[in-house]
Image (cartoon, rainbow, N blue to C red; front, side):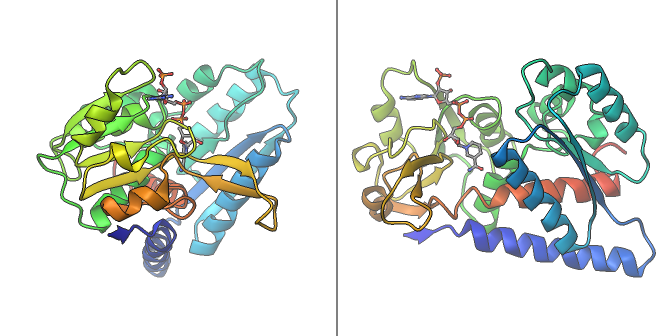
Length: 293
Ligand code: NAP
């Protein structure tokens, strides 16, 4: 059994990008630049955005952070988006979600120029993904593809069961794993809360991607010997054994499932750390004009 190390893989990718940025700088090229918009004072969102900006600095990207109070109107936010769409310094930008209730997430996402949508949420980029065209794949699915690729996990002809059909994880994952590509070429079963025979389906799976958000849901009696298990779930529970008083659990009962697996991602340290690597890869692609030529 091999435990897939997302932290190490993410660091490797960041080092590779940092080297590429050095080469771009040495040849006088344009340094990739990521901008982020943060609305309001949500503690979690602030931490995520701060860590994204810090990582940009670490690997040599330019970065800018635009902060607004949660009283900003939708119209004002859309004006800022237009400004970033037209700013030649900014290669890509992200808007930290969720937004305050009076602002439509969808309207905001659709206002981002697809070529600068490095979060990969714009309908154009989701459509391009479904059509197997060059695109920005959103952070979590892209991170999972990287893990499969870098651990050289065979996917062609395999049966992949995805648990969960959200727009940000399960649904794109099912499309990506079915694409005629590597990773891909799987026979995919997309499951959700109305699926009746989940255990039976999981027992047939060569690859299980668990993204339902229910702590330790996937147990050993649902997994066949030699399966690959990717655990996307993150549930924070109280714990008197950690300094912070909290601990993170995945959707997989790791201790009993891991011995049956060929490969498995842990929580924390599996899929989670890959999201920043994905964002940086997308920003590099944007600065090279690799998606929209
Ligand atoms: P979500 O929007 O809540 O979607 C959950 C999906 O799971 C839904 O499609 C739901 O079915 C399905 N589901 C719920 N209970 C089920 C059950 N008993 N059996 C089968 N399917 C079931 O969740 P999400 O945003 O995709 O996130 C999923 C988990 O991944 C969460 O723990 C989240 O924190 C985590 N996450 C982690 C990362 C990371 O970087 N590691 C990134 C994103 C999300 P219905 O559609 O029928 O309701």
